Image (cartoon, rainbow, N blue to C red; front, side, top):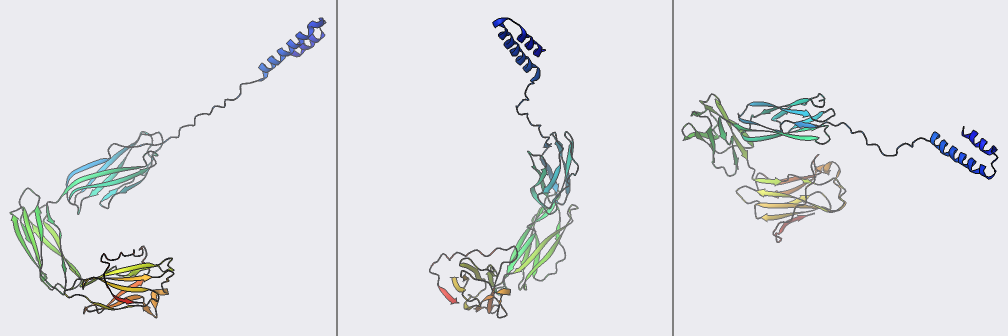
Length: 386
């Protein structure tokens, strides 16, 4: 149609007046064409992203108090939680704080608005007094991926022994008698009667004395030397008139204290080669009656200097090894079919030669740290060997 208008304008014989008509027609065609063929451009404004659905872990309570319970009781509680978000909730892991607490991990997916429970079981055996335990709950909640729950209780024992063990450290060279006292306490309202069950061990004498009738007793244990060698632990049984605790058990432990102690028991050094010089040391302590004397320090490691410092005359010594840079521990820790060790002679009849191994750290053990020099800088070096 617009083309016909333009052609008709060209054929009109109007002198100088035909040009505006053609131009007007052309302009009309341009405007009309623009209106007919153009469409609104797509919007370049950024669209807001769709919010990702996320769960939300919400507990009705995060702490629960069992109150006062008897030692040995097993108590249970369920922590209730809700998925307050708009995405599915998953409890991925539940970690109790100790072995006395056990939990059950829910394996179901909790839909938005739904609830779930985490059962907790607490075993109070061997626990006394006020106690608190924690449980860590891990979930797929992006805002609270680790929630800590707590349980607490006051654990009481009807009749208890404080402490429950008597420990005797004894020196065979200096045998002497000692007495340890254990308290027997009655927490029941009614008084109780206590008696010692049959006791036949001749190394210890046992006597039970009344401190407060029916309420408190003193269990006296006296050592009768000699106590022998090594470590010995003996059970000591008591009988009570309480139905809640008809019997009690204490322990008597005798630990031989050697007259000469070495700590640590080995010179630990990396297999090498060492990047820089390193120093290692062990302490030799005399606990016997007679002062200790050390002599003839020997070491089968060429290039390693060894010295003995007497820190406390006759009582405390430090044996120091100085390893040079580039040191390599011999293969199989042996030199000439002998174990690599430091040997030092002593005047003690039980330890004529003190042997201290030299080797790499055990699996999971780090090398010894460098030992600081004694505070007394004038400490004499009584032995030196290379």
